[in-house]
Length: 223
Image (cartoon, rainbow, N blue to C red; front, side):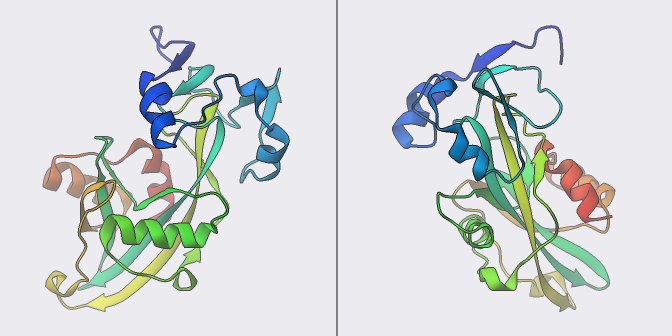
């Protein structure tokens, strides 16, 4: 937290575009929400203080409000780590986010009533064009609280990571085609022997950076 970090903040788009497009809770006061139902369905348990949700991890510095996120409390997400091997080197599919937050794994918010694996499969197809049925993906571990820069102490992201492997290829030219679409500006197969290896390729090869919310996640997954 820096000295100029606001203690309360919600981006103006949440109240206008967010509500109009349906990605933001229209209720302004979180005390009025049905927290019993939200807590029961949470991937990571969280508490309420005076009827307001509290992020189950380190404070973001923004104690009240939703920052740039539309929901109150936890937003469940599913991300997909797709791998392939070319001449002994691991490649993974990454997308450049359309919101300017950098390169990330394909993924996104779980829709109401949607299974996590189905969400991972759907987001992969929407953002890259790769079709991998949910039953061909496997979950790598428990849900993770991610340090999404758009969040606050009252609105945060939790993700489950699913993996899939496309096997071994002789040349990168043989890798399945990926095309950025939907929320992704572009998509590509990127060398990723380790996280440091991946980071160098994104920084030098694309002039970009890894999405802050996925740095720890990818460090662990590629270790």
